[in-house]
Image (cartoon, rainbow, N blue to C red; front, side):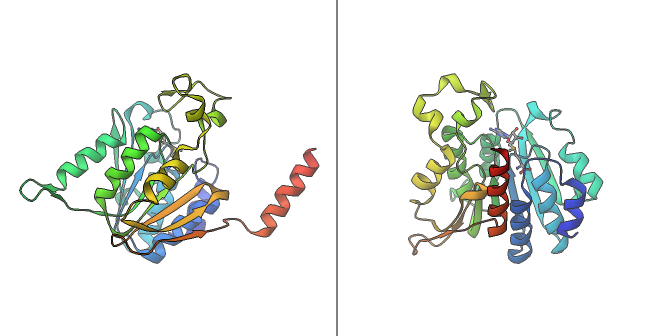
Length: 252
Ligand SMILES: C[S@@+](CC[C@H](N)C(=O)[O-])C[C@H]1O[C@@H](n2cnc3c(N)ncnc32)[C@H](O)[C@@H]1O
């Protein structure tokens, strides 16, 4: 299924921008990952783009994880969106009581050999798009690392997101009360901290793509201690920035 066919059907459903959806779709066409893991699915909009790309390359599996508590919160649901596009067969959906880190616990356990104590990795691409919280997502990174194949990639959304930005609208985000956090924790972008302090320093990760304007960052799993490379990418064209500037001037 082409990108435009999916876009025409689900373009108004959050939470992925057209730019990020297109780069995800194109990445799958180019690298042909066999097994993808998406942590945090909401309406399953990103899931639909990934399932469409898998169909386009002739197959593959997308495993998606979210919380049981929000099963009926997101309308349309991932099930409805996938069914409308006829893409259900590519996707397995898991809903967990406490969150995706327990799914990762189960997955690591199932992938581990009790005698050799080795966990066999299985994913070629992982998207981490959940609570964007240091405590939860520092752990999710190390857990995902155990399940990611060499040459596989991890993508994080919300690179610059902070609790203080969300604080204006609500008292808690994904079960974390904003009042329970220090000023520093409220104003620090947690995903950026995880990326800079854990991912970039990790000996198994060496190819980094930072797309600040679309809030996405990528890291490739490499042979331990290989040379590290950082690429800063603009997701939008110059005309996009000119239009944004004009819009701002008109609003003043
Ligand atoms: C921004 S949405 C995901 C959007 C989706 N990846 C997309 O681009 O279409 C974040 C999702 O993460 C889920 N979430 C938050 N904390 C979680 C956790 N600890 N475990 C599993 N899912 C979680 C939320 O319920 C929500 O559905």
